[in-house]
Structure formats: structure tokens, C-alpha cells
Image (tube, rainbow, N blue to C red):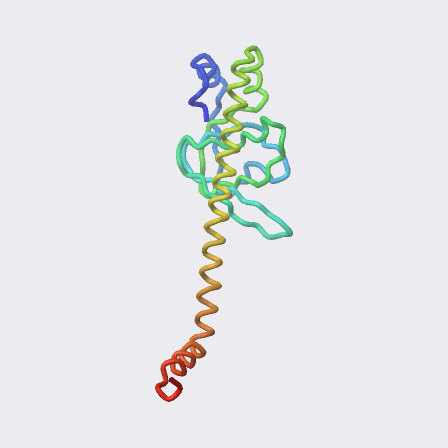
Length: 168
């Protein structure tokens, strides 16, 4: 995410980062709210969960050090999911306002930052689409297996009748 930014931006960013520690099962931010900043995982594990109609579903788990999330607030969008720690977790954190101040003086840096945000959104959409296809494939496979298992007796009868020498 930050690899395309220039060295001056990164140096200033590092000065603004703070370390945040969260206990296990701590909600870092809630669905339908705006996260307060960008998180970069140092260690631990975070679950991204979405609730609809009272049913909570885990969308993904973040456990790779350096993983970046919470960036949606930079585009003034509410979170579509909640972030909840699975185990005690440490992150680097920078408030969205601080990030915006770092790029405000330079239109090129602003452009680079928002292009990276678009790249992140594209990556998330591709991930969602691939998970959808995988789920659809598994569902189709399960339906096919169920249909075949219910039809086993019928298939045996059809095979017997088809190969019966009397009927040929």
C-alpha cells in the first residue's frame, strides 16, 4: 500500500505513527462507523466481521505483519465490517487527518495516495469475487453430490433395464 509513496512522505509518516495494543476480542472499530485511522499489523490477529440481520460472519482474518487496513475512512466511507482482535494484538496507527495533512501540500502525493486507495479497493473487489466464485463452485458441487446420491437407485434401475438382453 505504501510502497509507491516517496521517501519524504514515508519519513514524515513514520514520525506520526503510534503503537497501539489491543487485548483479545477487542472491537477496534464497528461496522457502519468510520475507522479513526489506518492500522498496520505488527503482531497478533484481527478478524474482519460483518453483521446482517443479527447474524455475524467472519469475512477474513488478518495475521500477516505489515497488513494495512482501516483506510476506508480516508475516502469518507463507513466501514462495511467490524475489526475485532482474535488474540492480543499490536499495530502501528495513524489518524486519517494526519495522513491527509501529510499529502495536502503536494497534489502529486495526494494523487499517489488516492491511486493506492483505488488499487486497494480493486484488490478487495477481486478477492471478494474470487471468494464468491469459490463459494458458488462448492455450493454447485454439494448440490450435484446430493442429487446424485438421491438418484442412485434410479440410476441402477435405468442401467439394468438398458442393458437387459430381453429388451434389446
